[in-house]
Image (cartoon, rainbow, N blue to C red; front, side, top):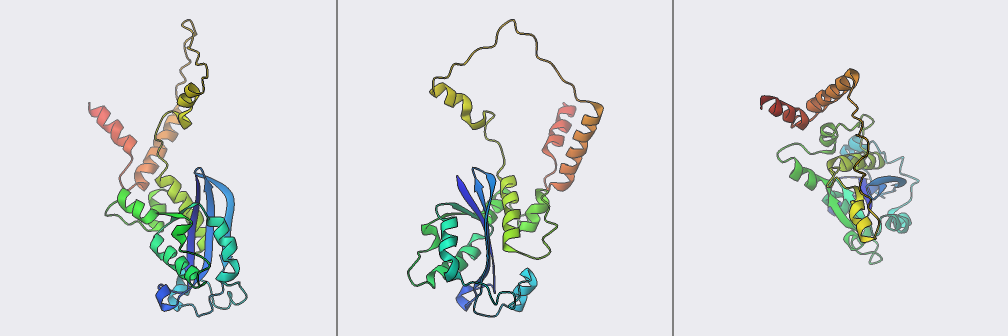
Length: 242
């Protein structure tokens, strides 16, 4: 499965008021692995950037003066995101701006959902953590993801951070059989050899004191960083009571 983690920066908050996209940042996931492929572009919006927006992303009107316009890069951008699932935090904002830019091209392109599906990680986070703060910064803190370089918003940096957050949010293993390999082998007629009855016993390797201390330190760190506490420590506490 090909997914594109996407973020934009804009001149303001409302495309209906003439605000435009000034930066697009994307990173690619293939089968939940970062490929190293990315798309990043600054854009000339042909209008002034709101002062409040500059405080958020730090991009100035002067910096964008010689940058290409959206119509100059749309083919390259759409080729990069086409047929992928877009993963976006607060997707209506970014999709609304992108659809506004596509509509300005007077029929050359249809709305974005004609070419891509969209997953909103804000909606996902609200389902997973109801009643809690679910901004990108809050999720970084909850999942212990380093966003120390994020003094200002930037589309590519935010896309890279969101990729880490998304993988952490959805990283639960659904099966102890990796990639359904046993089932696939059976379907393909692979020979499954039973273990010999007289095989030597398996070795039991006991954790050292240093390893136990490191394990406990890690549990304490998870317990401190997680809003819900460390599940493993709760299980150990319940077992000790029994």
